[in-house]
Amino acid sequence: MDRIGKYRIGKDSLGKVRIGKAKKDGLKALVDGVSDPELKEALNDFIKMRKEIKKPLTERALKIVLNKLDGLAADPHTQSLILLQSVEHCWQTVYALKKEEQKTKSIIDEWENA
Image (cartoon, rainbow, N blue to C red):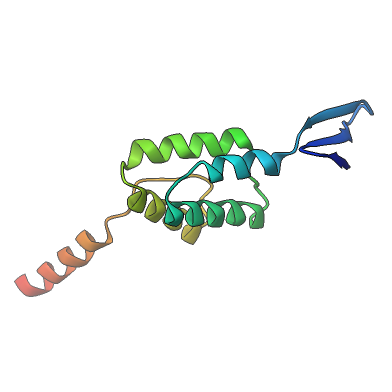
């Protein structure tokens, strides 16, 4: 495929020439819109992980992930922890943080009460 500036030119399965925006530029623009450097790094790690598991993010999918992050946590630090949890487990999307601390405390309480 040829590139002309921020656009790419290619043929679809029917042989028709298509011109559209390059996907990387759209993802990069969305990531660059994030002001927190920790969250930006976590987003880049998430995008890289998705490429490695051969399920790359589309621009729309990244927007959905960002909206989901906003719903799960308000502060950027927690959002970056959620993204890193997804990277660690190779999840295709984001979920609320697992409460590892509570599990550890409950196990300790069980041992103390026994």
